[in-house]
Length: 590
Image 1 (cartoon, helix red, strand yellow):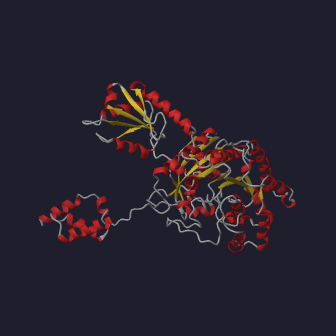
Image 2 (cartoon, rainbow, N blue to C red):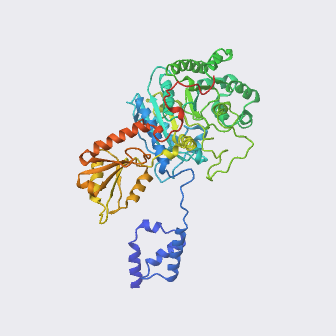
Image 3 (tube, rainbow, N blue to C red):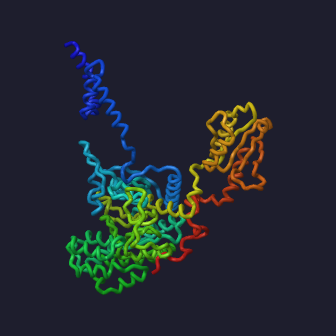
């Protein structure tokens, strides 16, 4: 009896959290034996060993639709972030941050058919929450909670989550970054909208994508007017709009079939819609719609046409028109858009379809036969048509005007908004593919260290560790990026190898004799034979910092790496040098 009392006393001291951890039969027997007897039974020892084996067989991988970022990919992605945020700040943007998850009711009913892609978190007996689907709805919620803020230019760079079918090399993932810029406030019509489109052009120009992107634009008022005039019932407009939005991926026959057989639209009405949505081009499309007598009595249409007329004027002033395609099939599936809508596609990013836009963007690229079998993808999550990372990623940025979203959260906080969201992972996929093709990836440095501090000596050399540490500290205090070997007595070839692997451009070399004279050697690594500084230059220790800075500036000028932006990673395109927005041929023929 005393044995049972002691065993029960030991068991009663175990935390409940520990009890909950042991729910499988093997674990519970191990647990109960360990707290009821002084020694483990042999069978329990065997079961504990089996549990260890099960643990050893754990499959180590990231969840489907996610990835670890490392090496040169991280460097390239960070430069993309830097380029985008620099342009945002140039236009007066201020950043805010919101929680990665929101109350489920905040996100509900905002995304139309895409609502099924929202990640709902498990009910923990408290508030029902979901991971954010985008950065726009959380921003609108923030505005509604802060009604004193009536105007703001806001940008936000953060991860979002969608239960989409992933295609990793195309940048379509379940966890990915978005970079958003929004202008909130009441202003004269279309001025903020035009600036957003200008921002798009500046970002892709600075990413080195000159002549390789196009901005498709449309207006929800025009699209709704077309549907109304064609005879689409009011309760079907949003679902028909979602079907039309698939024209960049599917041929008209497939979209028409969905409208008629799945949405219940008559064939006559569907054919009328096609007469309109197949139109694409420039300002001449606007003129064509303005002359259409059947559209003159539709208020939604006339408001949209008035907005677009202003927009084309402002885009001309901003020198953005060469990049614009007025495309009546662009619908954008999200329910909160109320006016201008747009999305950006780039050469190679348009999905395979019968779309003439995709054809025009790829007209200078190598054609691939649609009958040829695509090569197998190395990633089992990739199920797109091509294994080429630059093909089939879809739109790389998209947005529009959403004037009523804040009102859904707070009727007293009606703040008109217009914005753009950049899909960084998709931009990265295309950028990396182009860099690989041009050899630019080879130029990417894994770190930004400018100087490797080395030492060498003859017999009895002690490594000069403290001297190396002192010089490294001196360089750090001067704002110079520097490293040294963590070995007490490193060999000189190993030190040069470490600098070479890191792509470090300069070495500061300490030698015993030179140190006694108060001098060190600065050596630029990788200089060709015959260069007068190939073997390095001796400088006084007191002049080390200004001498290093002078050589860094000189190398920067020589390599053309002073400018910030993605071009510093590697030459993505030779076309980028000296070009300014508007100083090139239009991407889309009007």
